[in-house]
Image (cartoon, rainbow over all chains, first blue to last red; front, side, top):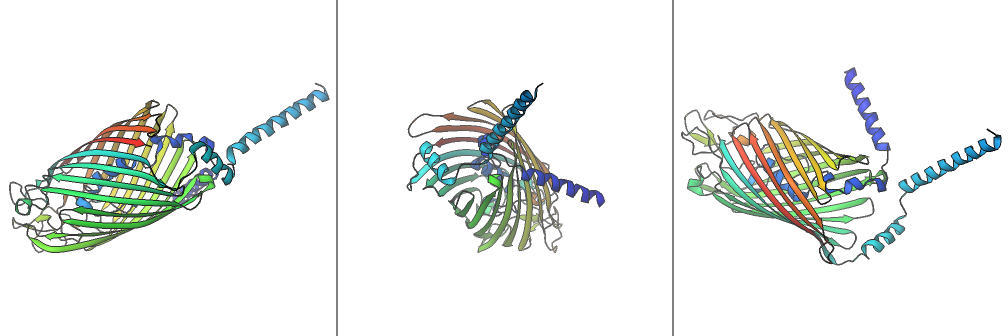
Length: 73
Length: 401
């Protein structure tokens, strides 16, 4: 239990430290690269998501619609 | 060293510090909004309130599936797994458009042509899914309230032979800390209305279900080359939660209907991580934890490594691993009087793996109408431990205007 609390505190401090460090606008050039898109190109992400949603019973819950379409789940 | 020399050195040091501080200040303090708007207008031209198509993307994907599942009939005996053979051809079109400087539209039209879906099962009788053509339209409109806040309305319609579906939703996001942190939330409602069949292919009117989803997420820029995203969502489904024609092998060597609860609560937590690599590459990591009240627990993780070969070309390699526990009432042989039961291979315990790759080419053009061309080809191989394989080929072309 104590170890868990220590880990939680360490993670909170690390997250807080990262959150405080502002990255200037003119140093965000890498994020404009299509390779760095956090969710990927929309149609590519959609076709991959559909592959999993219609074949694995673990769809939905993450903001994407669950159910609908020929997937039926 | 004389006192005068020491003073000169000290002054030079202070001047250097001020110079460095002024550079940092230029880095961190963006110009005022009015000045930014003037700069944007000088570079991009004055904003117009007319409807303007910014980009268009087309993609064609084929899914070639083979394998067997106990929910499908047509095996060598009544209780043997039947074929899950299917080929799916999916063209997609996406149009991004702007209407003035505050409104953006994204319209996506995917079309599915499913052939030979469970052709050896009840479709011999009903043809319910021997050949299915399905089309959707999804429309998302985003209104930028100010430099840090926006709201999105989504709506859509899905049509296929025995199935109708409508969805609509709302979302909003707000940026903090100079855009380093973006908090978002959304709500989505889906209503499905579809034909009810029995396991012998006879049609019994229509049935329906609803799916209500709420989600919240945070995207955080950690460093100049690292970004993370965490998203939590919860979905409540009610109504007929199966396709109505799935069957279950019985101990009497016959087949009976699938019996599912009429409610399902699903939750998922997703974490994404993207790191730019110094050799012009990018590393993406993804993890998803899923649980629901049918007893299914799933872990999914993937890694994608991309490498830029030239300013216009990059390649990517992808690997995904998924493990799910299966629902509490999954069975491959049920008693005739059993309560809840399913033999659906999608709800079984299994592991799956996907391995894939892609080549992407972005060609900048110096024409008056088209600013860039986009080409992409990709391949994925998906394989499950309970006898299912899918080969996926995809090809995309895009235009940025």
